[in-house]
Length: 422
Image 1 (cartoon, one colour):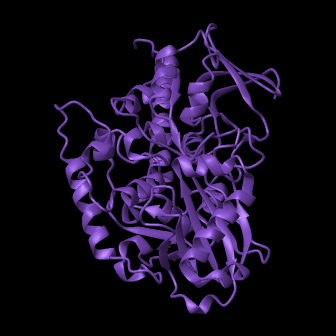
Image 2 (tube, one colour):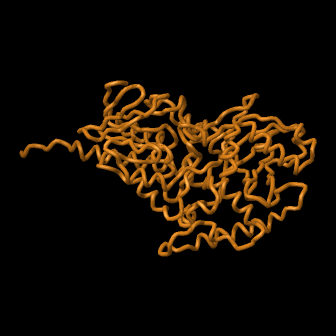
Image 3 (cartoon, helix red, strand yellow):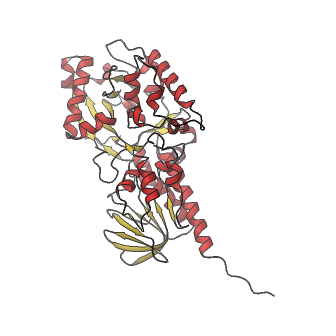
């Protein structure tokens, strides 16, 4: 790779980068995908348990599934799409020995989102927490649930950005793994793995992309790095792009970690059922019992709780989950549990988080982050999506858009030859 030249370099081999590379290859444009990890997929990653069962430690749900472009891609790959409604959409799926009024909580959640979504575009932005009903008994649980879907507590989240999120409410899964589907979509693309981009030099006629394996020059570059990495590396671009650094800083990655637990005598629980550890505090986990009917629990941790537990490693997550589950199902329950798979996304050096949210007053940073620079530097990734952020399909859509922008720029830079007059 050192000293090589291509038409387009794509920085980052997640869903956005893979989508961009596919579009460019279809147009027969010489493009190179550069990824720091030893695998493609980015924050989409299907690991496996001891028996080889696929476990999505990254994104796992096809949100807005009926219009999600990953659904037909998965089908074309011959994968199995499970259309069972998720536990959060079925009140009957809520379980636990303590009384939990799922209908009342669902109503409180719906009313909160209605108040937050009512913020007009002309009004000043506010933290989403401003729309909690004072002294409502469900406020702590609403905050906990925010850490699952935003990766952050409601006082950190822009109400305007939350209102702009467009979700159809249809959620499916890929039995063989969402992450494996995305990675497989990148198979065969020209790519350099385990290669970290250190700087993008804009000073010459061509862009110079400096990596841990040397430099490559390109007419255009598509940057699909997570917003946290752009914000933390003000010297990534030379000359610097302070507007991009500031926009990325307004869109930090929230934190949502999953711990998979094996469960002995799992038949006690209904397939695809759910329980909350504590409904009276924000620092609690959600527990999805028997996903796909498998004898396991998929435990969700978000926000400040996940960040605190990451300091103690996987063992801290297991101890926390065991204590909450014992509180729900009795002291003998811990004997039925064993850790299967886990990944700490906040500690991951190539993401530093799970998915983006906008800080209060920073919702428009998504458009600022997505804006091209100099007609040859383009941006994509879920944080660049104004309405499908935090999702793999939002990343894919922005990746395709960035590829189209790059192709248009290449056409302008290399106009067709003029024909001589007859």
